[in-house]
Image 1 (cartoon, rainbow, N blue to C red):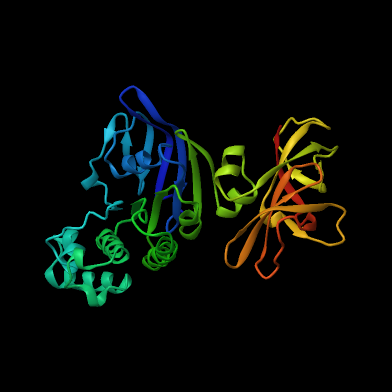
Image 2: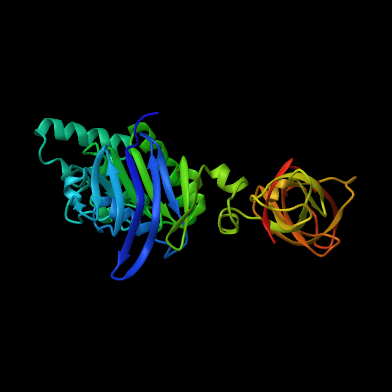
Length: 348
């Protein structure tokens, strides 16, 4: 495995006496796109600013490109780190046209090389025809692309993106996040973004770190976070789901109202111990012959699918998502069974 482009060890960050990030550690492989995901105030933007050099570290280390760039005893200034940054508000120069904005960080290049690099960057982000326009003449999505082109132009080994789509509407956010991922992959650039929006994280990132109250809760792929969350916070913050009462069986499985299943459980749980079993909407399927008959309590139309809240005979509620041409009214009865062979459980 290649040496990581970015490595943090036991990172601690504080404002005055108040420590806001506690013992954070992760590594980014070359060419990967990572995301710190979490609610407002969890410390994710502070981590990004520390990597960029805008915040000093209270403890631990940050290594970039095999160099120690930050520790309590060492602070390399932002301009000496060689890291690209795309700010939340894009920070474009309003008096410069698109071409000049992209060229801003290339002052040390010969003119012909600089012009070729700018041309290449505008083509990469799909703005070849917009080079003579000014930021106020562009849409929000176009301004975001200009900011990305400017960050990529000096060929940094790492680009940081701070809530890059927060100023855009939801449809534009998801579409542009996929486009930005394609641009970063085409450039071969390692990147890290921070966001509170799981859809952006899922669309862009190869690896996601979920943060809560200054601590990294779990680091993994979107599928791992969704299907194998390590605690209740991650289970609740990532994706939709419901917790169904269950009991631990001999051998480590669980028994629930919907039947038995293998389970991923914390160590130390005893047989017959009460647990809460996480069920995602795709963990359940309708089955007219199923032993359990549920009642449709609520429904939310989502276009391609309808998200149903089903009330089980015990009164517990679970979720299932069905293609929207399967239309079940509130109050209708629906047979339902587990569609997964393995679930995740947490102590009651």
